[in-house]
Image 1 (cartoon, rainbow, N blue to C red):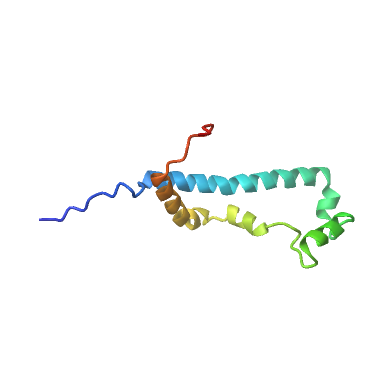
Image 2: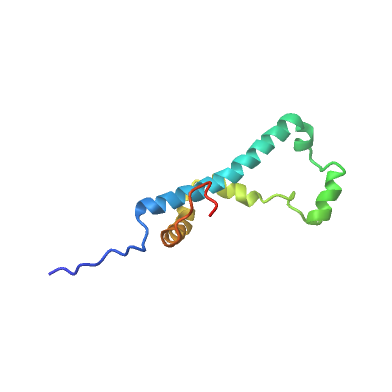
Length: 115
């Protein structure tokens, strides 16, 4: 006789994992989309500044003051690369599984609910 393995109610279903994955992907896209909107607006309105080979003053001095001489333009471009990479779903899957397990134990409150 085959051994019956009981279903663990604490383990998320594939649909719950997909929901968590969609949430995480949406979070990545949200940040990238906001940055892209700013970049497009800056390029349209201040093309010379955006395409300049050097930083104009006073922005150059501020950038060095805040980020030091060896700055990377003060932006986290790695976040952009992550958001537009083709393997984003695969890389986020382990985190989505953890998030789905957390949601299973502590369901998130619906949007707009404060308490």
